[in-house]
Image (tube, rainbow, N blue to C red; front, side, top):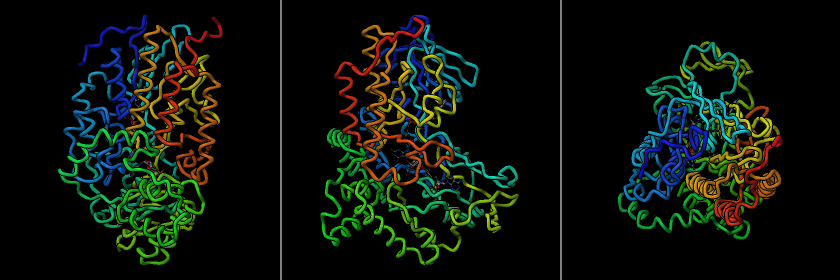
Length: 545
Ligand code: FAD
Ligand code: NAP
């Protein structure tokens, strides 16, 4: 299967393609381009090995919230046949082992240089090649640049005053070192997003004292992480073709059928029964999309489900003041969160909830964190679960330049834009995996969809002997307008979260996803391919030519 790729097809280039990233996206891209298209590929990752997200996020409690049966590649029949897992969701070690095994079976590591960060990528109009430089001093040229940089991988570390003064340890969850032992320690966690929720649940029973610094109260439903036995796993295996067909035609691609029933079309008692059933079953995306069809689009439906969760908080949390602080006041319209017994954590004697919206963090001191009121929390360790500069963060942090030397940063000064979530006008032969304006789903099926789509485009370009392929500015603008129109039909823009860039101070709020679902996305990008890539410019003349 694996040829030894020594000669580039592209005249004058070191490689046909450079792939950056060794997560789900980059690994599949290397396999596709190298093994199926026969291109000469050089790949890089700043990490020490494969895994992407799961290489970096080794914090206690790290778990998928996509169910185990569908957080994997659909095309890899051998991998599916031998797959096994313990529970309904996958732990970080299980996912890293899965991706490691995938890399072994497809002999992918030999194409990578690990511990190597791409620092710049500049398109040279004269040669039609990308010139890629790394922090290890490599400079290589390639016709195609494939970026699988991750949409949740550029770390957000808020610049808290006095962090350097703190004598204890500070760890960001997405740069978690090996061997951190938090047992018996006084630990502070800043952040209550998906990561914070997982780490808080995992740490509360083992640390001496846990102080949670919460800025936004969150809607958290149970995840339902029960064991799955061999019989259940075999059932998935026997049905994989139908399962993937369903997933690829669905909206959020989480392996269940989304409801089409409007919440207000049923009597209140029936709504309550549906919410209660979903609460007991677990799963954030199920809660938002399997209960009723309009939770994310209709204000009354959203209020009803939010009210249900608020009542759960009031029932579970014993101290009324803590319950008040934990109760969200905004819409239920962020990326859904889940975790078993999250609110119960706050009934423990060793857990303190601090509301940093009411009393913000003023500074780190030598021994802990001081709030604006002057209240001091003594800590041995601070866990920053403060998230990511999502989607475009890894693009704007490095120097990527397209035609005429235009920096990606400038091109995206009003917010990141990606044609079909993969390309950008003026950036020829660049294919982004999970780039801006791509689908908002369980991600492996969307990643596969994109890698397969641009592999077809590259195969076409190679067959036709094209030098460059890029979207027209008009097509790119139209796609962004489509994404905006779809987003405006939902309630998501009304909540402040990373989905629109609202979590990073100074970042322009922008629509960063195509929110119509994977099925619709596949049709849209399939139509572009079937039209003979009619929205693309082939071999665009340079301005000086
Ligand atoms: P990543 O896995 O993020 O890999 C990107 C790689 O690119 C990284 O290894 C990084 O080191 C490398 N890189 C970036 N910039 C450079 C550079 N300049 N030079 C060299 N290398 C670079 N999604 C789901 O669908 N379901 C889940 O349950 C789920 N759980 C998640 C849990 C956590 C804790 C997080 C953070 C995310 C989760 N996600 C989940 C989203 C997850 O990121 C995707 O599912 C998927 O792993 C993305 O794969 P990727 O290959 O696109 O990117
Ligand atoms: P996040 O959702 O952006 O949450 C970051 C948290 O840090 C928020 O609570 C935020 O508060 C807080 N924060 C940020 N800056 C702060 C500051 N200066 N002071 C105080 N608090 C601050 O990031 P995340 O939790 O890492 O999750 C990101 C995404 O990764 C998820 O939405 C999901 O897609 C994925 N993920 C999935 C799982 C899973 O369940 N499998 C687990 C982890 C991550 P505000 O809300 O007020 O901004």
